[in-house]
Image (cartoon, rainbow over the protein chains, first blue to last red):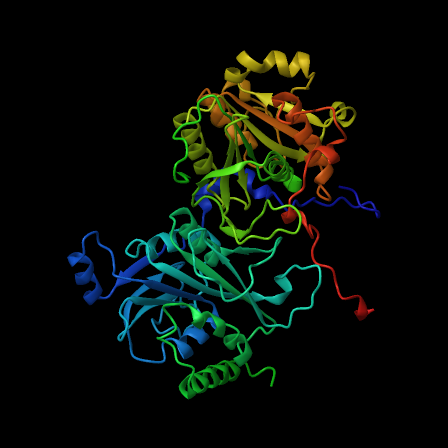
Length: 272
Length: 273
């Protein structure tokens, strides 16, 4: 395409990537690992004993991203819980994995279970799962968890939100649910033409296709780093039937939120 | 790949399948949006595949102020028993390197569900046109031999559509010779720049003897709604989907869904100026 000044530019299409025509590309696909799921020994024996290799689970709570995982850490995992599994995806040969999510190359997502309510399974996903891996990541997670209710918490930048009138107080939350989800959502539906992509979408799509009751709560945040407001925007989620008795809004939660914000601030000393 | 909703048909004998390719200007996908909204097609299943990036949203086909909480996923299948048409809508691009796998799975589904014919809607870069293509209509078609046997007369003589001109590679036949030999005669020298999986699917369709047509318009990135209207109206001339074809302009005939709001982004706060 020729421009006003006469130079010729390559035209890029928003719909179509010119690389896609390259038939050799299939051999060059990144060598990052496909997702691996490992259950703890206790869970593995439970699965062996169960009828169809399925965990007894009435609620699966999945938190994706720093603000949702911070919220779940403070308000749901405040009492005793046990580690029951880990899902690792996207590891390349150059990555180091610390299993404590303390390295920036950590690619593990941990699965927990509350000791008091072992039918509630919580998956904390602080490592970024790429869109290409999301489908298989989801299949792995649901390979031993079937037909329970699923609640997904995710967050994104408020600049991604498209609306005719921008009069929402940020942060705010919107939701999407699968067609078999019968409970009343704790916030408004995500209006058209907004969409959700990557891991939250992959999980919700899986639930929709396999008729699993699921709801996705998407928070729109304006800060890059987590703060108390970003985590507290998820508070209405605690009205869910299963989570009501589990979570208690108490002083412990406030302390945990403050600690998480401080931890995050120390890591980013550039702006005080 | 195909997961049907409960209590839906297990084959689509006698049905026409219309699907979009993710192509320049998203014209095929816009066209499918018009078809589903205007004809009131009902969701019959999903194409659940790891070859397409995940996306979901709310109620893509509502019109007016109605906003239900009904989820739409990445690739969904809609149909009308009355009009004997099945339409696929794909809302996200393919995962890099997985297009061949997607085409193979698609062909397997088409064969097992016994579709009568398949039409792929796509578009091609208008700046890549030959001199002979610059003037005249922007619509072109390609048809496999299996489809030509039944529909060539309609397409060429009744509708007077132009077949897509073949383009020999300027680099001569010595480069990638073995690959050229794999391609059936009817698919040789097909060149659809910006057309997404159109060429791949056409080549596989020729090999597997699928009655497949590729319908494309030449366009550039921008406001592609008029291109979608052109493509959908042309498709309607062939399939006779709307009850009264001659009533009104394409803009009046086809309904636009709510998911087309804010196609070019949000409004901005005027008080910043």
